[in-house]
Image (cartoon, rainbow, N blue to C red):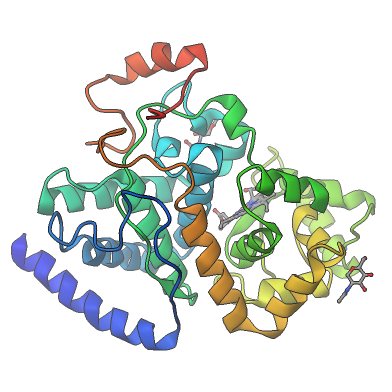
Length: 348
Ligand code: HEM
Ligand SMILES: *[C@@H]1O[C@H](CO)[C@@H](O)[C@H](O)[C@H]1NC(C)=O
Ligand SMILES: CC(=O)N[C@H]1CO[C@H](CO)[C@@H](O)[C@@H]1O
């Protein structure tokens, strides 16, 4: 085991050097007390290498897992902070809420597989929330996006977020003013909105998420793509089985082509396409289309910002032994405990 880990770390440091020269974004210091860059330096030195190795392996099998990880991270952090609550399973879990019904099971499984490898190497020292954060960063890098350090030291929540909190996630049919408000309620600004939407440079959506575009309402879609999608979605039975790539130019590469799509009116969701028409967001979207380093820089900053919203640190929460279950409670308990809709993680 030790040699395997050492080998992984070696491989990974070599890979990291290559990546670092490609584009490293330095963001500000962690803003949350209890989070730090070197949190696991003595607790679990090989953690970053182990995570990176497993993510690389998984993406070799299925590049779509990169998008799966990035979306899981967003859905974990946005409702009540990055506490891995989205990974909990059970009848009252966040995964049963509508926005999570399209989270990729393969990416959810990968996170717990990595947790098992990390805990085998170091004991239960690293939270599922930090593993999710690291795996997401590595998925961005492996897809061609920027490398950025992420502050660590998050603890895992003990209960899923309530339906109300999951309901804070923005919907694909939101207008830009609605998106701006949704982000503002989570202390994310318009620049964060435009940059983080750029995550739609990878991954897929399903017909029910964009068929509202078919009635020709504003923001309008480029006619050829519109026609193609209408034909595609005519065969979407049962609904939600047909998938479409979010970035028609480079669907699996993390780059700034998403903003080219928007300029060509080939954004998939109304929430994407609107960004190029609205006076509050269009200049930033155009700037990112002209300047990939500027997009990478802002994306990294906005991800680090989102990664620190409302996190549990110190003795709050716990280090989950299984990312799908709170410690010392059976999944049967979750059903009753979370049933009162007070599914908040320790707000301590
Ligand atoms: C701005 C508001 C946002 C809206 C309305 C939105 C909505 C959506 C929807 C509806 C899907 C597809 C679901 C499906 O039909 O399968 C999706 C996919 C995705 N979203 Fe977003 N999203 C937003 C922001 C973000 C952010 C901030 C991130 C990450 C930083 C993100 C990352 C992704 C990724 C990577 C996918 C592809 C997932 C996959 O292929 O498995 N999104 N989003
Ligand atoms: C941005 O949108 C506003 C309002 O629709 C428009 O007046 C302006 O010309 C647009 N700017 C660019 C750079 O497209
Ligand atoms: C990934 C995942 O667990 N998705 C679940 C979301 O919710 C639906 C409906 O309850 C489940 O069928 C999915 O398995």
